[in-house]
Amino acid sequence: MNIILGPPGTGKTTKLLSLVEEYLEKGVPPDRIGYFAFTRRAAEEAVSRAMKKFNLNKLDLPYFRTLHSLAFLQAGLTHSQIMNPAKYQEIADWLKIGKFYSGPQMDQGPYKDFGYGDKFLEIINMARIMRQPLRKLYNDSIVPRKTDWERVDYVQRGLHHWKEQNSLYDYTGMLELFLKREAAPKLEVVFIDEAQDLSPIQWEMVALLQKNSKICYVAGDDDQAIFRYAGADVEHFVNLQGNVTLLNKSYRIPHLHHTLSKQVIERVVGRRPKSFTPKDEQGVINWYRHSEEVNISQGEWLLLSRTTKGAQQIEEQVRRRGHLYSFNGSRSIDSRVLEAVRLWENLREGARLPAEHVRLVYQQMMLHTQIAYGCKTMPDGEDSVFYSLADLQQSHGLLHSLPWDKGMGRITDQDKAYIKACLRKGEKLLEEPRIRISTIHSSKGAQADNVLLLTDTMTKPYSMWRNMPHHDEDEARVFYVGLTRAKENLHLIHPMSSKGYSLPC
Image (cartoon, rainbow, N blue to C red; front, side, top):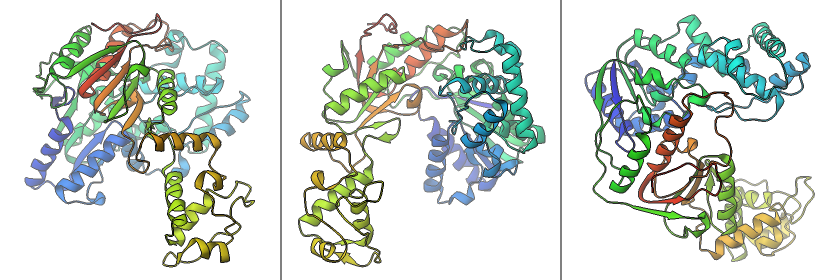
């Protein structure tokens, strides 16, 4: 096994793709190369970069995907066989336990808390992911005890029976089926990215892939292993044996950031030793009492919090200040709404629009009941037909020519006020937001010129476990990830509660 250690900003994905290129140049067919990433986003990024770099299409790279996607493919499953919220509700009704929630799970977790039913799924699935007996995990758990072991066991057996009888699989079930059938494809070379976040069941998949391939590369950084609470087996990565390559130059982290983050990560005992150099710039580190003291009116920003609650508080502040942003990947205002606003004002200024654009405008004028607010009928013409404001008023049910904020009934008053505030601030509505808000866990792989990091945890982390032996080390890794996202300026917010994380000043 070949192990590639990639500290923050050292170009781990670039290194892996350069190795892919080497094997392609040696004549290895693209469909005999496996590149498996931890998250769907990372897998898609690898596919996109590989297609562009090697002049390939997606069909040429069938094994550039997540491990869950690989299991789905190799097991020959269909989407109708995958559990969804409706199917979980059927089971919950049958078991008479109330309500399950199980939306599409991120490959890396975590399980979202939508109520009582989720507590069953959380602990049952965690036992399967970690390859541990459910009873042992139940005894170690501090899940609020609204039920006893007999009840948990009852739900587990009911879930298993229902899925087996109906040939249904959840996301963990796909992995189990892959292992049961030993369904690993025969490949020349296998690359495993972000390996520090793999769970025990995923490590079993990797072992099977390695067995069926000639060469295996495993890449990751145990210092960035922040998903232990979701089942990640960090120690497995730390203890891997093989040929080790250390990427020892960061192209992201300035000197000051490197010094601070190093002090934090050295709180972790038993990590893989790795020494790497920062980039030449010194960087800037500023401390504040409150996030509202930070001027975010210019430049690229990544605003990070340890908790979702903290990120939501940041979001409220940013919205109140009239800035566009994205929160965990979702825009603060739907781009279709902003496009409709622009198109409508263009119409009012004398422009002619194709039917497709008119329909986009009309959608923001029609109420959900389909009772007309500003129009009666949608133009059904082809997109090659262009309409003026007069055309629409005369022949296509347009009832007014008011400004967008007066005539678009589908846009809430709250959103109208927010859009106006953004316009006053000079925000470019149709460009990708320059401000991203995220939890630290959702920021893996992200970077920005400017990073604001809340050190306040606000809630007790890792509440699922009674005695988390690695709690302090896991927290050090989380904040290490947060501290290493900035390319230039790092802005740290002092904790406002007793639950803040202590950083060296």
